[in-house]
Length: 116
Image 1 (cartoon, one colour):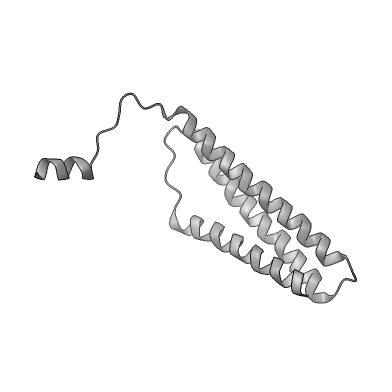
Image 2 (cartoon, rainbow, N blue to C red):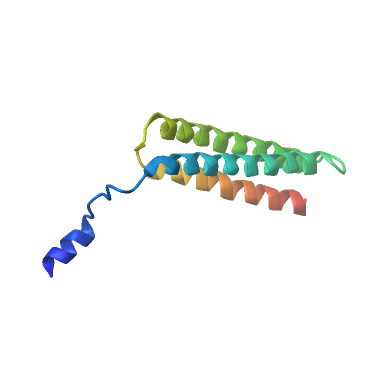
């Protein structure tokens, strides 16, 4: 039984597996993420500037745009890393946390813009 447990913990690579499309799927996923962020940034800026521009709405719109630029920068670095190698290094916890933080902050800014 210990042999089964050892093989489950350290699986041998499947020689028939073709990882050729996974980098492409990863690149496309990052592109979709940046596109969704661009839509949020444009809608945030539009909301901030429509109906009379208050200081809170302008600051919220600017913050949404800055957060989108942060996501764009991190996504671009990841796309370059995936394109450079068939086996890119895993996305590190600090970068993953930064992307998650930017995404949550964009949602929070959007909620503030809607309420304000």
